[in-house]
Image (cartoon, rainbow, N blue to C red; front, side, top):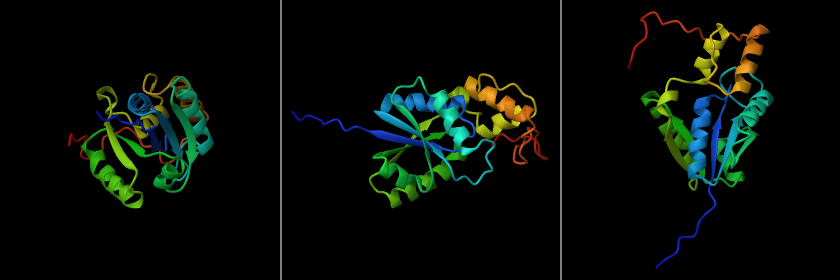
Amino acid sequence: MHMAIHKHTIAVYAGTFDPITNGHLSLLQRGCEIFDEVVLAVADNTPKAPLFSHEERVSMARDATKNLSGVSVEPFSGLLVDYAHTRGANVILRGLRAISDFEYEFQLALMNRRLQKQIQTVFLMTDYRWLYISSTIVKAAASHGGNVKGLVPDNVCKRLTEKYQAGEVRQGTPCLAPSAGGFRMS
C-alpha cells in the first residue's frame, strides 16, 4: 500500500478586484475547500482605469476576507506567473462566469503554462447566483444610484456609495443601457 504525501498547495487568485464582489468571495470560499492556502493577489497594473487605487482595493479585499481562514490578500505587480512562483504557489485559480470568459482564460492559461510549467491553472465555475455579477456591472449600477447591497460585501457597498456621492465618477464607468441593437442573449 503506498502512502500519498500531502503537498501544501498554495493557490493564487489574482485580479483587479475593483472592487471585490460577492462573486469573488464565493469563488474564494470554494477555493479554500480545495487548497491549503489561497492568496488573493490584487493587481497593480491594469489596462482599465480603476475607480479605486491599488491601496484601496487591497484594503477593501482584506476587510472583506478577514473572517476567511487560509486566505491572505497581497498586492502584486508584474507577471502573475512570476509572482506565483516567488510566492511558492503551484496553482493559479480562475473563475469562469460564462462561455464568453472561456476563450480568453484558455489563452491565458496556455501562455502561463508556457512561462512556468510547474504552475497549473484551475478553473472554478462561478455560483449560479453570481453569474451576472462583475465589478464593472456593479460600478455601473452604483454610479447611477442603483442599490448594490447584497452584490458586494458591506464594506465595499459603503465605499462605492461614498465614491459616487463625492462625484468621483470616472469616464470608464459604463451606463447600464442596452446597446443600439438591444441586449442579446448570446
